[in-house]
Image (cartoon, rainbow, N blue to C red):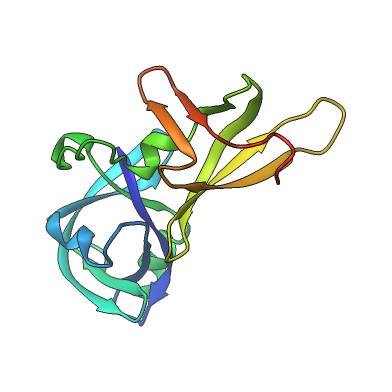
Amino acid sequence: MVIMGRVVAPYGIFGWLKIQPDTETLDSLFDYPDWWLGRGSQWQRYEVETAKIHGNTLLVKLVGISDRDAANAFKGKQVSVPREQLPEPDEDEYYWSDLIGLTVTNQQQETLGVIADVFETGANDVLVVKQEIAGQRSRERLIPFISQVVLEVDIAGKTMLVDWDADFE
């Protein structure tokens, strides 16, 4: 499963869900007639009855969810699609979900941490790299996901090489 968004809240009284997509374009989820809702290893398939854009979110009516109480049970669940349904990314393009969990190392072989999240700023994507330090609070770095900084991505090896000083936050 590839996480494509999350259920923010129920919408209205007829079972609609408000979805915050984590996709490049707001309507990318509309390409899939079935969505999988859940978390971790617990997923259930739902057929999309109707979906529309509402500001920066999506409103969706799923088959079988017909009232606000039923919709409220989905609050906080993730929305995903099976990996085999996604198009192959172009060279040097990655799904954010593939980047999360990679160990980030700089050119001096210093481990900077593990990618915990990725977000968009408008100018470029940003990697949230968290480093656990024994006996101390964890350290978080925000590293721009641009070609001048990200030198190598090895999805199979679960590593990323960056041009980034360990002292930079």
